[in-house]
Image (tube, rainbow, N blue to C red):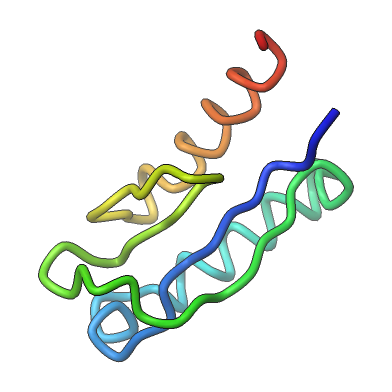
Length: 85
C-alpha cells in the first residue's frame, strides 16, 4: 500500500490564516491514530493560492480554504479512498 502524501502550505498568507493550528491538529491526529506509517506529512513552500488558503495538498489534489473543522475530514476521505482502491 502506497503512503498518502500530504503537504500544507507554509507561506506567509496561509500562516496568517491559521495554518500553524492546522499543522498541529494534523500531527496530533496522525500520532493518536498511529498513521505515521501510512501518511507522510510535510510543510511546503507557497502553492500560489494565497487568496484561497490555507491550502493542503493530498497526493496530487489541492484543497483550498482548509480549516480546523475540515482538515481531518479530508484526511479520512483520502484514507477511505486508498482502502477502496
